[in-house]
Length: 156
Image (cartoon, rainbow, N blue to C red; front, side, top):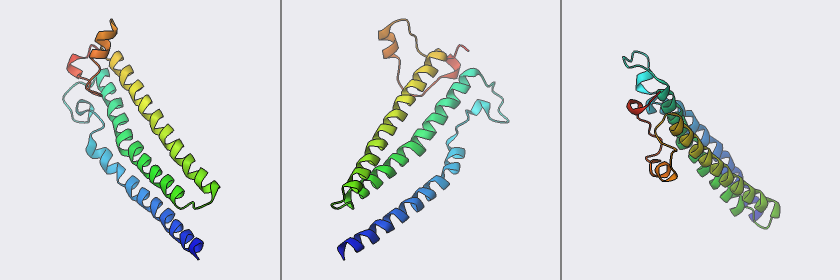
């Protein structure tokens, strides 16, 4: 009796999760248009000149959008699913292993995303000339604030 009820609850939870995810991902195009991924100087009708530095800003805006609006919410969703699988596993070792695998892969995935973000950010800042690589102290001292390139100070 308990096992049948637990199976019913688990089925409902797994039916609800994709519906929530679908509603979330359906709202992403609105967030993309209102978030301003394309720099103002490069939009149609702009009187400013679009430079290579604005391309760097575009890449950083796109990276931030993907991380903030896709990677983090997907991580939260997958951690919740992994936790639900472990919680509803009962004595089943295969379900417990599945839940642990979901959690482990989610944490590894978000770690890869964050390290890639750090790499992209550093490369763009070096290419646009916003940090100097002449000395280590100067390099480390000029890293922040993250993901901000000043097009006025760009040498390209």
